[in-house]
Length: 411
Ligand SMILES: Cc1ncc(COP(=O)(O)O)c(C=O)c1O
Ligand SMILES: [Zn+2]
Image 1 (cartoon, helix red, strand yellow):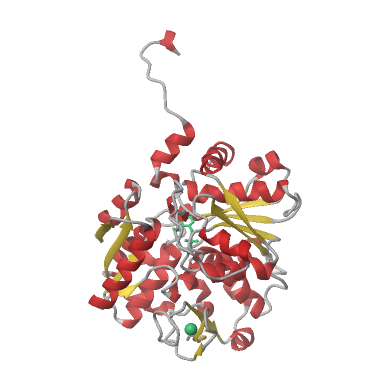
Image 2 (cartoon, helix red, strand yellow; image 1 turned 120 degrees about the vertical axis):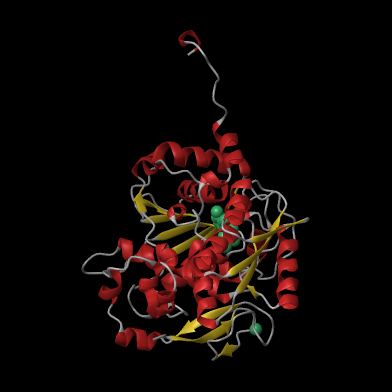
């Protein structure tokens, strides 16, 4: 049973009543956004059955997904591990900045230690459903590591294109899971272009962020989960006041936003949270477009240490801008120094080891509180997106080096 009806084009607005589309808009080449029969979901699905389901994985949200979870019956349990990441009440961190209702959604606890497992699991499940056996992706590291891990659970082959400078931890993950890995001698944007060309030439399915409409559908499960975790017996789903997300291509924020929009569409929440997008100062393409009030993006080479958000030209930028604009949120910048400091604070005050891109969210929370864009008593969810273990070079930069000793006198 699926409620998926087709796709709308983010760029030209065309409606495609064809749920089998798997790439860009056939009319204009823009990104597609999956559509659902919300009226039927409202009639047929009980929110309590989903919120209280014994299945805690992303697959419990079946009515809102473009894939029938039954397809997983044919493979092992690997793909069922995705979802149910903790929502931590960050009391110590919050107390430092006067925020009493601050929550960390910790997706570094997913199988490959990043948020990207949500998207990759959805793409791999769809590949199983449609009999595709090679998936390729461009990635700054986490999406590829997640794809390699999820594809391994299903016996699907993967081909990866990453830019130079991808941290060893992420490269090791892809290789260990059996991916064919190419390091592209260029920017992330060059990896995106080469992957696209290779998919056309060799007939591989392109999972690259934005181009593949299934990634957003996987990512929206974070929004659905947050709302279920904040819910109670009376209101099985509840929206926070604000959600803060680190942003590179803009696919994570557009996904989390879509999760809440789905819930609003079926009347399970009364309003959307405000979305705050945190971008790196040294990856300015998206925030420049936001400030100019446009949805087209210049290629500006990104140089930030935060690999996950080091994007030269965002591949899901228009949806990211809409998530922020339509909810009354804002864009916020984080410098490399601020992200390293934020890594230290998350680690020392909440025991969370975040990579720099993930720590950017905490920079955003602090700035939004300081400027009054978020109030101290508001319910704020900060999305954590990747583990610090993936990029230990940055962690050591943030934390310093240990002292070598031999005797008691030297302590
Ligand atoms: C750790 C981390 N945080 C945030 C992001 C940003 O996600 P998006 O590119 O969809 O905006 C990424 C993407 O690679 C990431 O790896
Ligand atoms: Zn179009």
